[in-house]
Image (tube, rainbow, N blue to C red; front, side):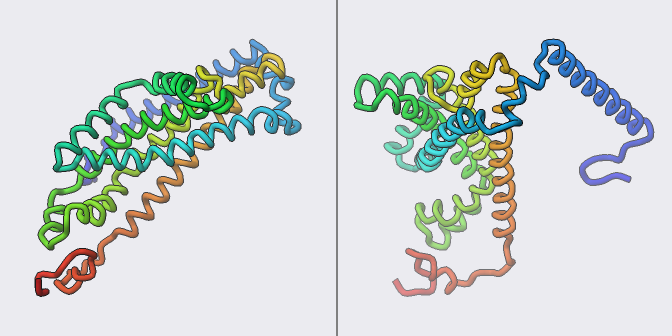
Length: 297
């Protein structure tokens, strides 16, 4: 039996796929066993190294929770600023006015080409030399600045690509019924493009959460990953245990973010299903700034 997308597998293909699956599972089990035995030989699985994370809350309250707070604070600030800024520059790049489109293109291409770590270091020096930001707050400001400048430029490209991916008939039909260009963008194109752009936007938000660790590695920003170094030193050479716990926390945060985005995307898609109704001239009169074809000028 075949479908529109592919032909059904024959007996030989089924046997071959079963063989490939078995080989993959054996290789995976062998890899897991090798990792386990290597850690065990080095003494990294001893209970004394893992005990601080399973007995008592000192490790979490003293090291993990403060670092997690700083990570979430920097990521949240960067998201809140970068999302509207990226949308603004993405729409500006689609402007018919050259004096709007060219500067927006230069800004986006410039900051998208610079590594985020360089932007963080530049921001740290900028705040140090030309502002009154204290040395305690400077790492946070520098991390957020670098994340905003880089990710806003990437989000601008995501927004631009999402809008351009829509059929031209959408904007042409909106212009045909008398909507202005800003109304076409605000009422027609953006609401439809959001659903298309959502997976890419969420992927970039996950990047923001992970890139906060760069500030801890270079700018002494006390985020979650840097807390693992301090924690492993305090409890005595449990580096593997400390970084494993931190990695699990990052996985939980990013998985929660992507799961929420998947739920939201599905909800938006279900909410935008057409009823099949055809709008008449009087129905378009309710759109702000639009006069129906049958109304008097």
